[in-house]
Length: 339
Ligand SMILES: Cc1cc(CN)n(C)n1
Image (cartoon, rainbow, N blue to C red; front, side, top):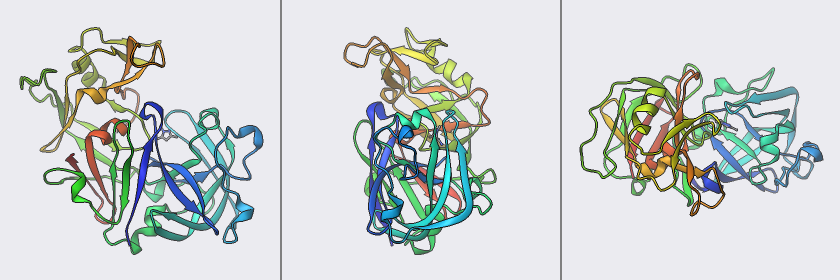
């Protein structure tokens, strides 16, 4: 079996939503596919009215195949401080035609404010390792773990794009979505994340004059996390990069590094083993912060920010817009390629 779903960016690419069918008859909800967590949770008929902000909900009572997983609950909190919790059901879940029966569908009875105000997202679909699932007392498996035996190839891939729909594929690698060979790297899943070692970085001249800085070996542990918007890297990499951008500044009031929206940003190359992952400078120009109109805005938030204080760097959507990524569940590997 294999399947493909579109991944549609929300405003300023803050998140990417993909359609998921749940229950009988199928109810389609748009969920945030998150390789940094392992719970599939949804706004549902159990979510209090006061906690809804227009999201499409999973109507449990309308699914003839939903079964309550008695005496089990879930509660999750994310790196951005958001959190949710609730009850657990088992039901059929399909993604791009890949069906999983008896998938744990976690129904939210409580959600924090950033979820309430995000009308487009009906919840998350976790794609990290089962160890991180929060259901108690019986930990549940992710959609990809449950789907694995039915997949042609034990992989899923991420192909996100700037300001236009990309896609997630399950069970196959579409060679037309990337160029050149795939560069495989080892994964350490012992903490439940898609964690890997990056070895350094270099900053190319903005004018592409090939006078890239030498590789600076700021090695760092990183996770591949499609649920995080930005590229969060060691402070030293941020300093070395933004010091090359006229008008860039680290502004605590803005919450991090800002750049003039008209800046010509240099490319950032992240060295992963022998692989050089190039992040084009334009992807490091992120949302305007002084107005909502990027054409007149003067100051923009940087697409790369510091991971200081975090246990690892976080390669989020900015990275996946530049690099086609294979999450090889079967072999516990990641693979990257330019596109
Ligand atoms: C809701 C959500 C998901 C993630 C990434 N795992 N964050 C940072 N916030």
